[in-house]
Image (cartoon, rainbow, N blue to C red; front, top):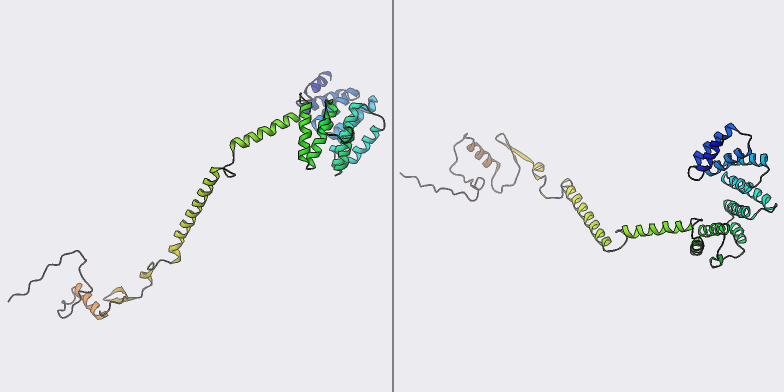
Length: 312
């Protein structure tokens, strides 16, 4: 049992879930010991198991008579979605004149419960009263850890309400008064600076600078080329080009068993064409009285030998 308690205490900050397992193991062996129930309650609170934390810390308070965990119990009620119960526990604790450290914890829980209920103005009043009334960043001075935590909660509340400039002044004052960064505010500012530096280093060419203009031009050219390609692909289907399907659309005439496109050849008649085809096929001798050279001329560029007149 003792070894489990020691292990739970050593793992509480870094591995709270494992610490809770050790504390539960100790409870399985000695559930009637107040310190064991306290260990389970604290470990459960750190591990985020608020129902078990509240149950075990109440058991510890009954067994030991120690009510120093009232702020933690109230915070568990907040985490379980019961801010009204949290406020009731806070008021009960405040009526018994708690110590300075517990008072800070109770005011933090009270302010958080007010925010949970949508009472941001009341939450701000709680923190302002705890900071001395009408606090300013310049008046923070050299506070103790409790005052630093109250000031941090107040700055976060201002930021959540949209008062970013005033919240930034408070955060700066807290960081200056907390050289050891017990509140974590300095680390928060460092993370924001790193993000800003990374954004500046990487840059977004689509936002500004000459690269943005080049990218816009390239996108426009690409869009124009895409439109041109689509128009080119659509033209043949639309039949916009003259003569694209003329051969398929012309009527035909069958002459000598062969189909010809019905084209206007001027003075040449269908009988002339039929006779010429018959001559080519060797079916009839070539007529001498007709001149069809207009139909069957040699292709340009070919030399046609002169025919000698017949001799007697």
